[in-house]
Amino acid sequence: MNWREVYQLPLRSDSGSYVWSNNGTMTFTFDFDYDYGEKRKMIEKIVEKLNGNSSIKFDSDFTIQDGIDFYYAGEYAFCIRGWGHLTGTGALHLSDAEAVSIQDDFAKWVLETLNS
Image (cartoon, rainbow, N blue to C red; front, side, top):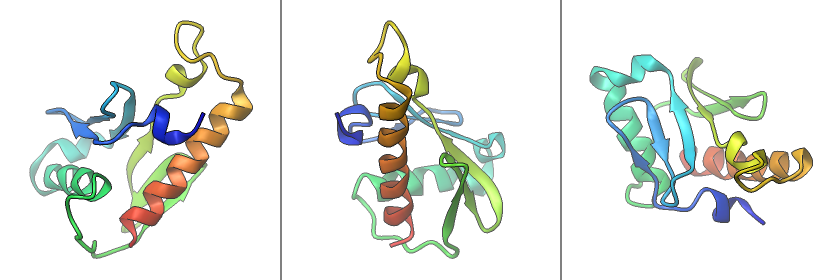
């Protein structure tokens, strides 16, 4: 199994701080500050870029810490979600090693795509 099977594109944001994959996997949780004003628009820009619908070049590069936490301009922005879907008994029930590999590959793609 690979990340494209778990985090199926296109992504969509809800009216809050969450982004979901096409197959319903919770994909990102943004810092709750992103629910308001200009930061709210940032969620949409990120989703559009990851979906291949925008060629925007962000003012600053994204960085990643601890494998799932993304930072923008030095501030926490969002984290990758879906661990329960990957490892849960009622879900995919993957081993921790396989789940980590899928999330790591997805995080790498997200980072490369956002910074391109």
